[in-house]
Length: 185
Image (cartoon, rainbow, N blue to C red; front, side):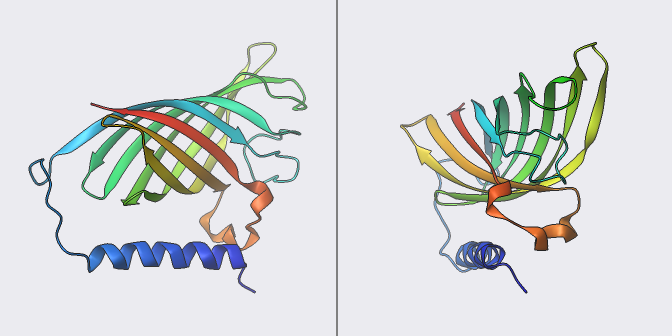
């Protein structure tokens, strides 16, 4: 049986894509094909991992991470490179902190954003030993709120899974959330 949330997400994606394909051409003050860059800083709330064992870290409670990001925008899509710093990981049998690089390809339509990406937690324990936790795919859906000419606020939600064919296990309690302030230059 198809999960109603997954069905809603697929419908939203198809609506955004078809709206963009059949929309009138847009005029831009920039030359066609030129892009712009953004730097961002914010926070990400990772969902508890004891309820989501497919995730990379067995965190027993919700954990917050600091986020730094770079985005390269081109027409209706952008690449996002980010690094998350999880300063502590409670209840993980000696794991101390994690640094998480991620890359996302994001499609944008007016204020809405949706994309797919990949990330991997690099975890350290109290003795200084470190290792990669395993690559995870993530699907994101977000909203970009302009706060002036160069500043904007991105509100996003993410669903991570080790394999994209495991989307049938989708549950809203496994969602991660992020807020990111971005500056265009």
